[in-house]
Image (cartoon, one colour):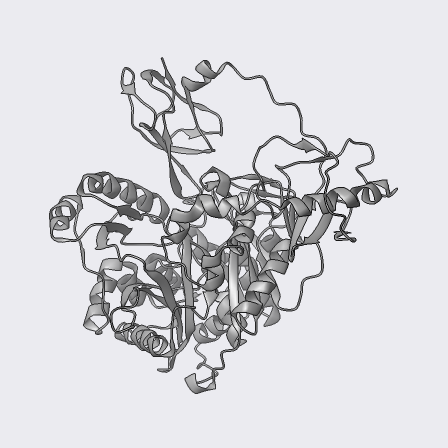
Length: 627
């Protein structure tokens, strides 16, 4: 086994890898960009190497910088985590040239599978079905699309994570989708090539975890269902899939192993499939999507069901050890669900958020079946330059019903303050019949988002219970709030609809209602847990917000097109003198590796364009002025 390993990543996955390294007694060295120098991962590491530069391209996306960091610190191996260069053959090759072991598949495998179009060819040759599609440059794709059935999906040939993907519903949309997806893929992965596939309607996203050693052993570790997505990025994952029976489970596992064997796979990876609705014979068809040749964000739910440490297995395989178990030794128990806590505002189109994370963690002791994999802690700053994932809540139950119940309790006791997050969305999802029954597809959340968010508000009974408990809570001498008139700050609440949203705070007023017998329980100086109607709601008391700044009149505001978030301008779609109307594209911003379109909200003529591609803007900065 290795004596020292360089962790070439950041956030929660860096923390996750470091914890296993420390458990195994291996020296953990963290390669960190300057903004991450005081992160939780840096605190846990035995040594931290600050990478030169400040951007992702100069740090986590620089193979030479990472390998040099490993060489300077005497690390025998480099673990890339996920994202960044985890799937890059160049990093694996640079490691090999420097005598550093890359914890992942060999470069030849990364090269074969890193091109999604080539991976489709490998799957076909292995006898695994694929979705009809087309490959080539933009001109070729536009020509070949005529032979395909719309809607189509434009996908990046390199990388993943939902970036460089666009759904196209008509031929008229294809050219712009190809251009936009190529631009986003190039920024995220350094490879702007794309291809197209037919979009499978009412599909589920199901993946199979595999691991293989250098001695010919290869295992599958069960499937995970990742159908609950938005903008093609996973939000909730669970295992086993509610839509997979034993016959399909066996077929998916066999297909995954065939694809892996076809390329001589080694180390941990995930083979992803689309699973269609049942046909006339009751069977669900499935189609190969891609292979992610790395550890996945959602690997903890596989660990929860198998009792395995996938990072430990990765390290042992990379060190040349044989896998310590056989397929027949595996035991799958219970049901596990993972909820991604992203610094994104679901009430503003999932715009990414950056800033001071005032609170992130449990407000009460977690139950044994709960797990929080976090890359941040109270007081950390969330940077705009990197991925929005703050952490993941993982729960386990003896069956799916028990797991859902555990999820409700866990999400109620998670406190997040300072930046908007996806936490209220997750609590709302638990109230939907579709999610509770396991009947969701990859397009369900996009189509149902308004109704889901409407469920995120705390019910009237919870407010009444809190009202009745406040006199005793606020009268406590230790309360830090006795100097203030008390408000519920909707922008500061935790696990309820307006989490992180800038809305007007409401002063407390008595409400009429049926008396409730001590349903509210104070957890600490700030948080009150209310249990009513079989559900728990976590409230945070905050002082009154400052008075809003004076704004210009509505007509003047309508003439200004401003940046809805901080980011980099990648495209300006208008010029001075252009006529515009509500809904006309003005500019495209890139933030946290995703593109965000900014549209005009009024009719007029562009008087002045204030930005150009490459400019960095802050939230509220002026992009264009209309007249």
